[in-house]
Image 1 (cartoon, rainbow, N blue to C red):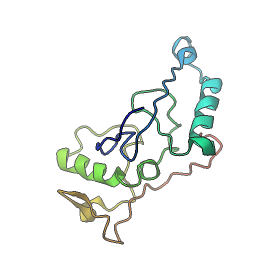
Image 2: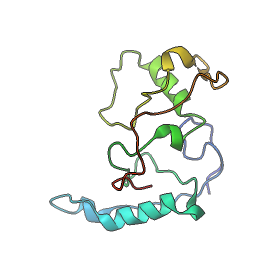
Image 3: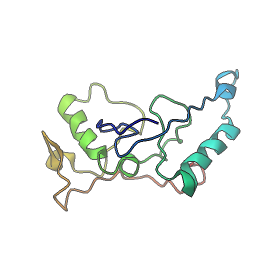
Image 4: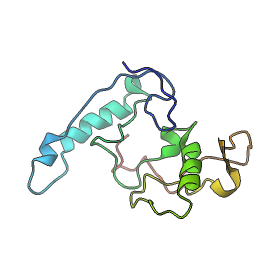
Length: 142
């Protein structure tokens, strides 16, 4: 078990957690790098079964959903936009912008709702959301 941490995107920022380390050795040892469906079936179970509710992906591990399938505002509802505010404050010109669609705050009014202390969750018009994510699509594992 790992105790609760305060980092905005810590996988244990809301409560203590237990880590399960899974590696996709099949994918990384293939010449053609085809998706290891067995591995993704395990991820789908761990992320979608009611008994595993609240499970989160480790930022440095395999198993991330396909493009368009991950919504940070649902994974980190209390801190996702606070992190977006920190990104804007520390990298205002987007020099370190990622090509990954994971780092997306489209739909959240960061210009208006961010301050030095984070996202203004007290303002009912400041809704933390990511647009264009249909995680119910068949290609999206939970």
